[in-house]
Length: 248
Image 1 (tube, rainbow, N blue to C red):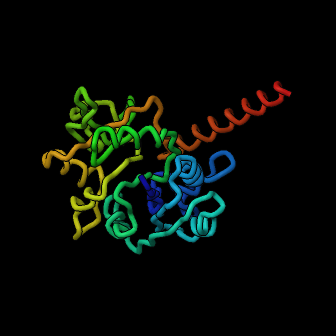
Image 2 (image 1 turned 120 degrees about the horizontal axis):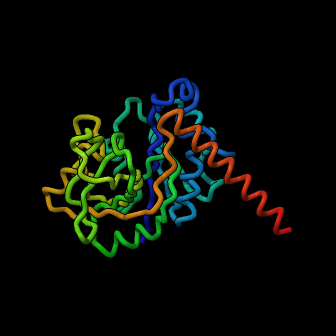
């Protein structure tokens, strides 16, 4: 089955303050490369070589770096948004370029998902959406889901208040989608996948499943997140270098 991908890279990243004035959040460097590059490499390793990326804030920084994607073994096209369309609305603009099944990646965090395994589960369950999920202690800035015994999602709530929390399983920001999901996206306004689209699939009895992961993405939502991820990456590189030296 031919699967293509879309990476959402249009956000401003305002919670990072001055760090995203001249550089879009997905292009912040972690280790030795931008956040987006980790996700492009993940798609390429997973056999997804036809990729669309939406861009908006400081889009030239992204397009200059990635160009046509050939360096990473992919074919990369861009969807330029003059006004932000949202995580769901962005798909409508390029619906004729998306395949029957496609992978949607929130490009401003570093994903560590086994995409091939998620795709395999997606096919086995006959899902229209497979959402990668993981357990998170603080869910106040996440979308939470409830699941039945077969990991079918029965309830979705974006950014719950403390008294609304019914689960600690959260959306990891990488989804496998069928084309029919696009029919549930509002056409008259910007829209969000977790807030506007996915909840509408449940009463329509469309199969939405969760793919459970032990580790979620490396979040880079705040300056504190950024510092933590940069420190973890530096420590990981240091340990790798030490291990290489010991093996010589």
